[in-house]
Length: 182
Figure 1 (cartoon, rainbow, N blue to C red):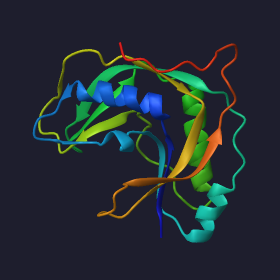
Figure 2: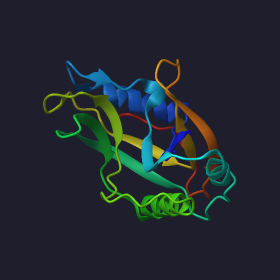
Figure 3: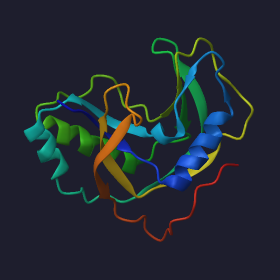
Figure 4: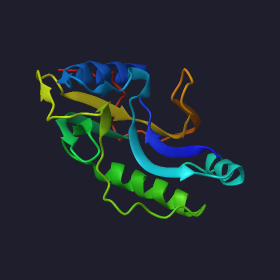
């Protein structure tokens, strides 16, 4: 059975900006997340049967607008030993999208997550101490779509595979601009 999750899956320019910011986080003795694996998880679904996975892939996109995430925070969770980058604020549009993905999972029997949603991009695992930064973590991510992603078994060249993606409505009066790292 595939292990699935919904995520904000960055385009190439946003991925490069995230990788640049992640490289500025000092996480010696930790395992860095590869640039191609950087993403923001919306809802983790776990192992899903083939028929339910197909139903999730065929869902109609929500009528939700795109939005902007302004990153600039870095931190870690001691218990899970994960270092992360996070947006400075959580827009209501992100919360609405996360609620939609949770409801989609619930429609195929996945219980809602008991922990609160904490939007972040994991940049390193097995972190043993508070990460230090050299600044320059600020970046803008214009979110225009989201994806249903499969975690692939270990030992494969790719860690994740996008199974389906949905486009969000464009932010009112906002043109897509490339992400930047300041």
